[in-house]
Every structure is written in structure tokens, then in C-alpha cells.
Length: 215
Image (cartoon, rainbow, N blue to C red):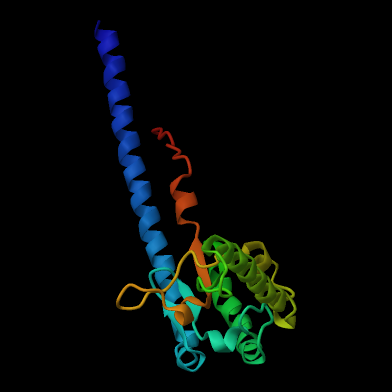
């Protein structure tokens, strides 16, 4: 009986040690993730603070998203051809953006290039048809921006960037609403670059408890 009680006691202590270690690791990961995200934001904010107003762009700290929100500069209506003014912006922006993110490449899981449209389409088009037509258009637009990025000489040697970047067309699934809660079509048509860190993957890593021995 005494032996059985000792086994139960050992298992209980081991469980408490595992719980405490898990909590400690989760705390460390969360702190490290918050520090990394803050460092990424500050690097981008310092680099682009003077450019954002003239680009009509914004940097969102919470999501590490740099949003280009001037639809008349980005693309023609119902077109995936990048307009010359947006080409000039991308030519300036992309090499500097990648350069600022490069020091953080070990904690960056994905650089997501998102294309967003309004829900509008030609008059008489059913809402579901308009959604899928806009889906195709937003995908074509993100592909056009990504192809432009790959064509820049400054990025041709940045293999890490190619391994992290993903182009996603989201159609009108995430509209921007006005103060009355109605869709703002102009504001909804935008291009965004977002940084996703490896926080979730690190948090899900198995916890290894190292046995300590006295010497």
C-alpha cells in the first residue's frame, strides 16, 4: 500500500511540474511574441511614417497590416492591371518593406498580400455572381502585385521572402463600413500587406521536460 501511495504521489508531483512548466513556456512565448510584433511594428513605422500620408496608406499596429486605400491609384475599375502610380509606389515600397522584415524572418510565418474589393459589380448581376466575379478579380490583382514584386531586381535574391509570401484574393468578404454601418465601396477596394508571426506554431510545440540529476 505504501508503495502504491508513493507512485500516486510521484505522478501527482510530475503532473504539477508539467502544468507549471507548460504555463511558464506559454508565458515566455507570449512575451517573446509581443516583443517581436512590437519590434516589427516599430521598424515599419520608422521606415514609412513619412510615406504613408502621400500614399494614402496606413499601418495598423494590432495586425501588422500596411494598407493601401486609394482605389483610384491602385487599379482601374474591373481591371487587374496595376496603374502606373501604384507601380511607382510598389517600386519604392517593396524593397524597403522586405529589407525591414528581413531581420525578423525567423519569427515570421507568413507575409500575406491581400486583395479586397467592394461588393459592387455590373448592374443586374446577382449578389452571389458578383461575389465570385470579385473573387476572381481580387485574386488576379494580388497575383499581379506579386508578379511585380518578383520582377524587381532588389528582391531576386530574397529567397526567404518567396518562401513566406502568399497572395490571397478575398473579394468583398471584408468590406469597410461607414459610420452608419453601410459598406463604403471606395474604402473597401484596397490592397494590404500583413505580417503573421510563428506565435501559434511555437505555442503548440510539445513541451519537453528535461530530467535534472545531481552530480
